[in-house]
Image (cartoon, rainbow over all chains, first blue to last red; front, side, top):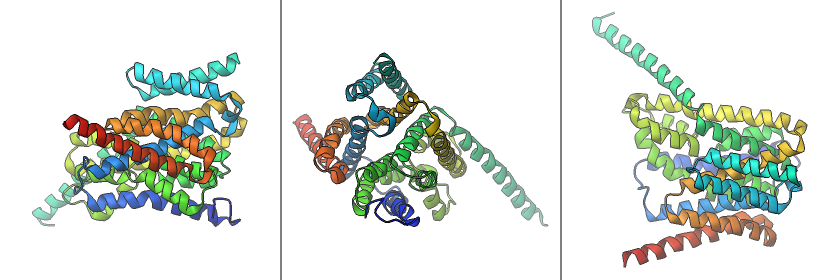
Length: 115
Length: 252
């Protein structure tokens, strides 16, 4: 039951609806239902946030270490270095996301040009 | 028509005009720096989805129905590592639990005195990090009865713009020079690497992020179909334990 396991036009859409739409909108609808009844600081929500953060960070780690497409052809050291430079620029130059993205991209392109 | 009825209909007219104005202001708010950042992350996402073997229609469909980039990136991650439907759904659900407290916090800010419940359910679909941050920042300065109109402009516009962005990138991707394509694939990781760090509410969020970054690739080598779930549960659980240990120490 993987994304590619059933050869029918509707299967990918069903996969996206169940694994994607249902798995996200269910939480949003519960949020409207509970609206104003749960405190943002409750202990359970700390766990909710840490698990979600670790999960997305895991995807980011995979995208940098095991990328797909054209990025896969670049040296792994360059990718980690570019991400680190972008992150450092973000931390040091006023914590602006845009600055971090631009610095990371410039570092990657400079590396590709020099190598 | 009696005088009273005229007054009410005039009132309703003014109300509709006001709603249109605030709706359009909401639309305009989608074209802002946060909106631009989100679009750049979607550029990378489109490239990623194409590489994972998805079609243009599937990717645009996914952008509109799921509408939370972390969830979509996790879903693509699951597809890439060959996760089964239940495993992928579980990983996406875990990555999206935070949408519930976000909506819980937004609803009291958003709803007017006469807002029907179904409209709140409809608007909640458009809640994701960008529109939520913009709304929480700006709703306070908007007349209460106009807030749903404003958000109805902001949320759906962000979705539509990014559906278009994804489609355009999908069509252009093959004609891009390799260097540009490589740079495009770095957009999404760079976006989350920085915005995830910035949005952490407590130190534990930073610990969770570092653990996830390391555990994701580590579990990818050991158990590909379950890498995200394991990294999320172990990394998140570890950060939660850290949160309690440091709090106890601080209390002593």
